[in-house]
Length: 245
Ligand SMILES: NC(=O)c1ccc[n+]([C@@H]2O[C@H](COP(=O)([O-])OP(=O)(O)OC[C@H]3O[C@@H](n4cnc5c(N)ncnc54)[C@H](OP(=O)(O)O)[C@@H]3O)[C@@H](O)[C@H]2O)c1
Image (cartoon, rainbow, N blue to C red):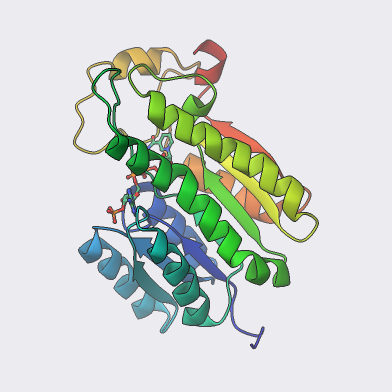
């Protein structure tokens, strides 16, 4: 395998929103960029076309439902084959839904844990030899609710908590070759299709009294990528919400 190829990043759930902005950041920084998606085929394809029109053969899309365990090894195999190497894995894909007590079933458990914890673990494991070879890094998109629970969202909080522990544990397991860090956003983009009655109340709980911006996440991705002495850390980007939670 030639290592003269440009560095390559795989970002899960990268067709839209924060994942798509992360993809744009890496692509603008000369990475070959693999956009994983589940349902957002059109958006993923449009993004890859945009990337390939500025630099040919620099972006690709891969579809996988992270609930499908068999699909995870296919995703990692295809991703490694795509440009011949992987340097950075960003575990960004996530499902988010309320799980009120008394009304929550196994399907919701599986859905929340698969995307937020199980897939990040097994994808990381499958990519280890490749990441090791390239002194690579893993960045997990966690949540401030991994530490302090969000009302009505026990399973989401539990799953993000597992991802937070995975971040620390893998940092310990995988050093010195691979660095593993996380970002815990506060309110950056409101969940799609959800009218949040308590949006103002949530923003009032931040010290900075406003919503964060995707650029704040991107700056942190850039910081983590370049800070070669940083591992096992989860950086809160929450406008100080965690001080007041
Ligand atoms: N937005 C915020 O303010 C905020 C706050 C705290 C934490 N975060 C974390 O930051 C990350 C990005 O946030 P976001 O709001 O941009 O995420 P999002 O829009 O809620 O989700 C990102 C993508 O995850 C994918 N996904 C969900 N379930 C999947 C499954 N079973 N298989 C494969 N893909 C699946 C979806 O892909 P398709 O569209 O292709 O189906 C979706 O576009 C997430 O990890 C989130 O938990 C965000």
